[in-house]
Length: 292
Image (tube, rainbow, N blue to C red):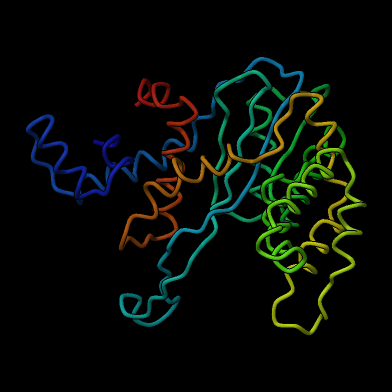
């Protein structure tokens, strides 16, 4: 029942139980059981992995729809629909296929703690080299430094940087030559020649008061993160330069279940389902049920 409730809408889970097992259980009972066990799985930690010589770790945020009730008055009527950010992280030893995941709706402080715990579960110790990769949001860079600054480096997702360059290319090179211009800048970045990219952009900066400034945006994004552009070094060590792993985690961990059309969640219930789905991905399913 909980497995179906974690995978599909509770209404669909009820239909699947009838289809597969001939059991008629209403969706409310499935909802209650699924959320109950989701909250219980928070106490089950993924088993420790062997110590990793090199560890790849990523962090990103994903929005889900949440309903918030007023703190006073008629809470049934005074409700607000908002989008809340689920912060998802993953970590795996180089050469391993299965990462360890973490996900929370909590504060940045709890997110930082979870990131460190996830990395330790994946094999982090004092001698592990930590390779972080992601989109370069300030809060992600800050939390990476808190956890791993002494033993690793953070790399900007190459494809995210390329999106900024593509936006600038239309202004600098025109539609026909934009792709060639982007590829030239990408080659420069891959050879750690960010200064040449910045010089190419600096010649075409828009006025700051313009409504749209794609060239200036690309220049600002790259210039403010020059310490996180060691693509050549990462490739020499066969480390990833893209953050596709965390993008995939958003889809299969969070969005597949919590962004169903028309669904809105109470925050506590959303966290329970996030915890449940993360525990399944971390192979904590059997250890939990063996004790419950």
